[in-house]
Length: 207
Image (cartoon, rainbow, N blue to C red; front, side):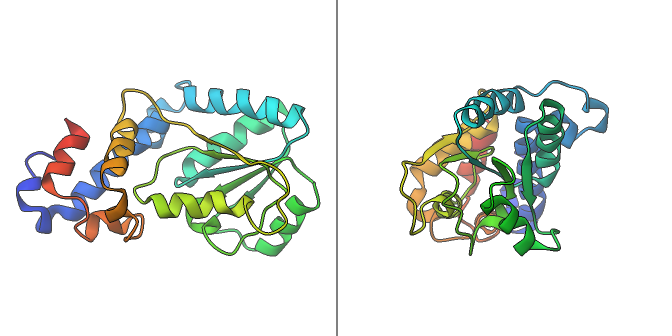
């Protein structure tokens, strides 16, 4: 990547793909290398520990990720421990039925991909929100959290951001803090293509 950033315009797609792989590695190595499917996942362990307390206390939670492959691993773990859930991503065919099921109280946990859940949802039934991976654009992240803050919400909403220590996720968070106004003006994946990330930003992310 350091060799590519000398010509950002030509190599922008390859750089973005490389950053995406690093972000997936921060979630679970199996997302990048199938031979690592059985590697334990500290982030899912932490999530399940939190969800067990949330569900045990009679609360309900939204769980967001950009990566459907990671949500699939979360689904599997929820099934293992017997926590009921609803699921929504871009391939979900009967979206209204899924939303109605969660609203009716059929499950305490709702797993949602970023692209499927960013707009048009009113999910005030939930009072906890878990963001499993940091997004380039703080505005997109805020839109997800706002699913629980619609008219009719009468409870405080607790938001957790799960960040893997010593990974690119920490550097994404730091970069977002420095460039929040710039990132807020572009779409999530488009932030790399639009030029919002420059060569110095890339060096900082992978140094």
